[in-house]
Amino acid sequence: MASPQTIAALRRLFAAEFRCPTARWHQAMPYIEWNDTNEEAALRAVAAEDREHLAWLSELLLARGSSPPPASYATATAETHYVQLQALLPRLIRAERELIAAYQSAGAALADDPEAARRVSEITGRHTRHLETLQRLSQQQPLGT
Image 1 (cartoon, helix red, strand yellow):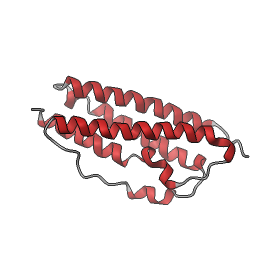
Image 2 (image 1 turned 45 degrees about the horizontal axis):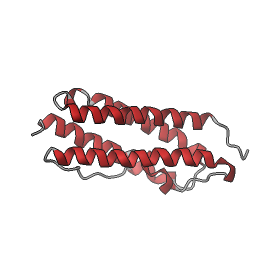
Image 3 (image 1 turned 135 degrees about the vertical axis):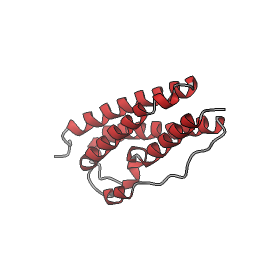
């Protein structure tokens, strides 16, 4: 049986991952220039991995006799619909930084569970790469201008 600290940390990470807008950026239906499809492909890859993280965290929780917590989207993301992708990227970068900090702070609570610690470390590494991708995309000038 997993410790209460491990379960609490995994549940916090699940909720943070669920709230992060990178997994559902496409729901905002941002305007993307037809010749900026490389940006869109990169973001789709980030979103696919984010959805995979939710599945991994769910599996970890279920294997430890718990379950994912009820989660909700941040209401602050409601105003992000139909904007240019370049306008959306700073918000995605900020959210990714916050998510990385949440994963890094969970390390101590997972010390007694090597499997969970290993998976969380893998997710943290992926989010670090996601942040690099988002930062690279935000530095590019839109091709259509």
